[in-house]
Amino acid sequence: MDKIIEFFNFLNDNILQPIVMILILGVGILLAIKMRFLQVRKFAYSCSMTVGKSLKASFSKNKIKEKNKISPFAAFATAIAGTVGVGNIVGVATALTMGGPGAIFWMWVSAFFGMLTKYSETVLGIFFRKKNENGEYRGGAMYYISRGNKLKWLATIFAIFCVFASFGFCLVQSNSISSTIVSSIDGANPDVWNLVIGLIVALIVGLVIMGGIKRISSVASYIVPFMALLFISLALIIIGMNIENIPNVFKAIFQEAFSFKSAGSGITGFVIAKAMRYGIVRGIFSNEAGLGSSVMAHASADVKEPVEQGFWGIFEVFLDTIVICTLTALLLMTSGAYGTVNSSGELLTGAEMGLFAFKDNLGTFGVMMFALILPLFAFTTIVSWSYYGETAIEYLLGKKAIFIYKIIFIVLIVVGSIVELALVWVIADTFNVLMAIPNLIALVMMSGLITKITKNYFARKKGINVKPLLNEEDILEDI
Image (cartoon, rainbow, N blue to C red; front, side, top):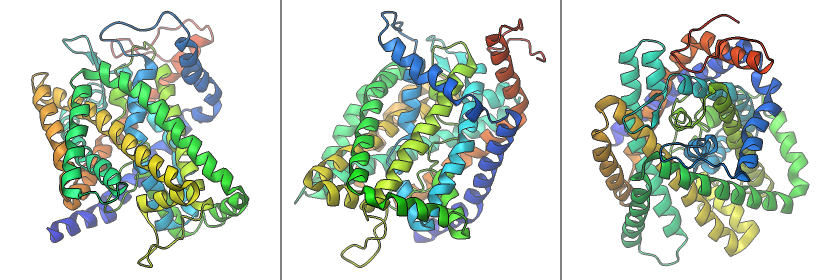
């Protein structure tokens, strides 16, 4: 077992992750150049078309009530539920441990380009999606790889990787929930409590995912804003309690940003998002830009314009990394959690670092909140990834295989809560990284189409009379 784990660690650390990190950053730069840094030029517009539009719709009487229709915000909430997870705390802590404060600068750089990568995935997801026999939209990297690039074999490989990655997420996130809750209960018997918690989580997740994307998106629409606002509020309180340390924190970030160690680890902390090493997860992408996963949720949205849902992709990366990951870094560094040693004389790492920051600044209340936030983050990730795996399995085997997939997924939640997962962590990381390769190839091959769809949208907004490019059936024409 140790030899197998050692092999996968070597494969990830020395071959797959470095290659994929370079590819993701390179594709982000390519897209930024082709679209003239759309994430900067149209950032205000994208906010008005996403958050602004959703706030206005929340006060409207004409809300989407049709059985198989998902609002753009609900699709976004499902996608962000899969990206804002345990790794937003543990991944940042790991990046700091690996590369020091300068790692945070490189997280920002990667997020800057990742905005357009996520935008491009989402645009293609809407453009090449299709309806299944239930009238639900299905889309994702496998659809635009097979229908846009005409590479069905590569799309099949992506879908297979996605199914196994979803099982990996299920196992490790379930383990995170049970271990976090049990560790906060004094005198709790882990053998008993882990099983009880696993059964409860499996029951709740089962009730959600058996209701399909409509129920998943509905649950995400309620939980995601709550957990994000809760974490942001508590992070701001802790940072405010240590506000005198902020100048030194930013000084350290920029002073150390260009050391080789910090640069490498910073990109790892963001691009290999949720960079979790042994115990949490290692190799998950911070906001999944380039991974090709969350586009499956975005593709379910009841929206006609690919570009308008693409704006949600930009905002997703902004919220996940620029906001939440930055706040995590500041609370860990200003509170003194970063650099503190435990009772064994070892530096605090991962979730241990986050728990220290909450406990040291907020006492018992902080411990309770930390025990609530991490399970919430993990729960939403499980639910979202169940839908990604479901979409992939339907693409591979058809609709009849979905029920069997869901049963296996629910059973694995219980398994994940009670077993040691050292091997599962590293294998799950491998599939996450492998998912990115077919997706990035597709983005490069279709970068011209993405640019054309974007130009078409803004030309029509200016009143230019051109044929709309809304899906693959439209005739592409130069603008």
